[in-house]
Length: 139
Ligand code: DQA
Image (cartoon, rainbow, N blue to C red; front, side):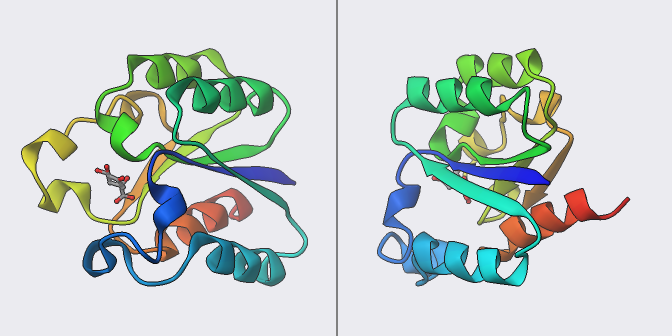
């Protein structure tokens, strides 16, 4: 099974960025532990701060991978282009957020990802990614 985690802007700063909201673990450390725990899955990871690069990666993986776990970060709330990309592909996309976006500012309540996502997981810290991964394992 081939699954990719795609992270959007500023998520390269996890561990350093607003640790009270996003925790103190770096994504690289978390990703290594996830790979070890789920070693039967071909799990890969891509991060970009650039909207077009995220769209290209969604297109590139969206017809051959079994699942995409997407945290589009701030682009969640602004990007018609990423929303359209998800609509265009065949691979199911799980929308993930580390924080509970509905418990935060109102502008974070709007998502261009949700209408075309297979599911949404928000508010469980980095565990949100693991829960999304598990959703692909449950028949
Ligand atoms: C986030 C929530 C977004 O509102 C924010 O812009 C992020 C991270 C989250 O994982 O909680 O950068 O997607």
